[in-house]
Length: 448
Ligand SMILES: [Fe+2]
Image (cartoon, rainbow, N blue to C red; front, side, top):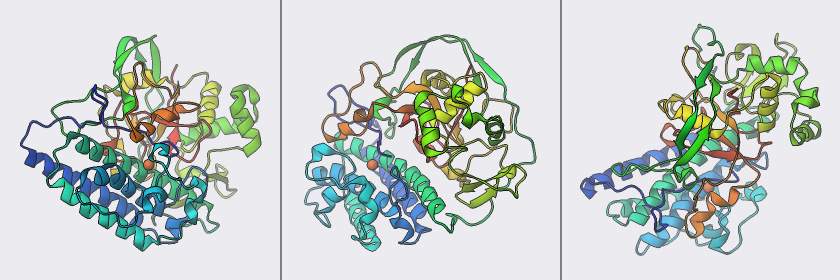
């Protein structure tokens, strides 16, 4: 994403710090090594089903090639962990230090244009995999003995950074395969079978509001406890009473908006959104295409290829912009929740759902009576602009560029998606994208 976000929490001297573990340091080394191996091997597994040619494609300005994701996540560990903290570390190739920098201007030297990442036919995929292995070997040496709290904090940050890129790699390859005239699938086969029960009715959950706290507080006893700097500091907010929907808006409900001429009624749209509708010719979510053979008139591209929309009407609508979410809410006589309202509700729910580990790689329908889909399925656009919380401080040095410099002209999304790793999401997590962004699994939860 043009704008990653992150940091282990900051202590009050401003350095990155993973929460301390009171256990023997040997236990901490074992657990951080196994976490490192697990995250790195997940990236490798997600890429392994793709050919070297697949891994070169960059089909829209927001996306990056899979090969670049594999290299850049490795660069992060080399740049911020191995170079400063592993004695006698030798880079496999010195040029990688600037070649795979995404946007950290304070590291100096040039940074290649993002739009040129698909031009990197060299280094080859084999060389990138050798780079990964080289850095993994260095990390393995470091992880057997590291005690420096700054280094540990940066390793935990690097793992969370890599998990963000796992999600991006999947959303980017989805767009790449969709852009290919042959429309190949990322995975073969049907979408996972749905239960026969019908989708749960859309109902309202009432929250009384009042003075509440949002934002993250680190748990000192957990060595892996982590949040990005933009989730801090925890602070008070006052909320008026509000209502929030029990589930995300479905494709079927969104189809009603389309059928009611939602995309041709300027009164439903914010001015900038209406400009986007006209300029880009939006008439449906990103991956919907007209299909006279389906009774809905539409089909949808997924990571398992094309599916008739009529088979997916109960699933949450996704790949829509903030503007479309906002217009839909206005059409329904509702609104989007603020991020504080969303967090107030989600902080009482377990951070579980249809996340990456379910392997479904697509949003699934809500089936029960309770509040569902807060975590996983689709990121939920909120009505909140991305700014720093009161007292927010970015990390010092180059890592301060991770989140803080993107706090303009973007909207907050909450809750993760069906391609977010489960150990990566939490109630306080703040994702952010420009309001016209459509290539992520982003959908709608209504508020009133
Ligand atoms: Fe990154």
